[in-house]
Image (cartoon, rainbow, N blue to C red; front, side):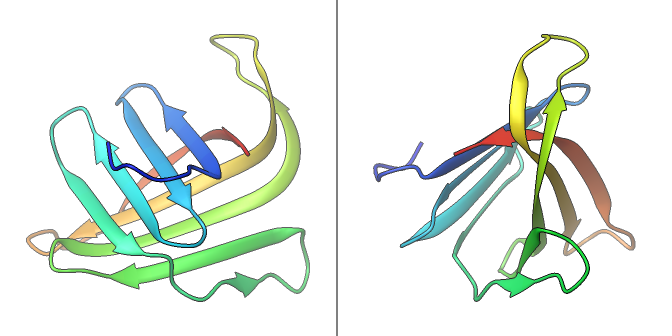
Length: 107
């Protein structure tokens, strides 16, 4: 992990992945298979019809789009409550299509 003050975290299972965001510095996405993308935090785009924020970045490894929606949810596997619903779309340079990861997150 990078050394910084983490403002937001999210993770998912099947497949396992994690996301860390320091809103002043970087976003770091990682899968259990070893794929990682680290990028500066791009300018946020607020949804007009929902309480959601989207971040999109292009890196040497590929494209990373993170959407954070303020929505109370409960993780079916752990029973843990979360304040945010997370969608991460990743397209590695060698891929033709995006892979979508969904889960819950906390600040």
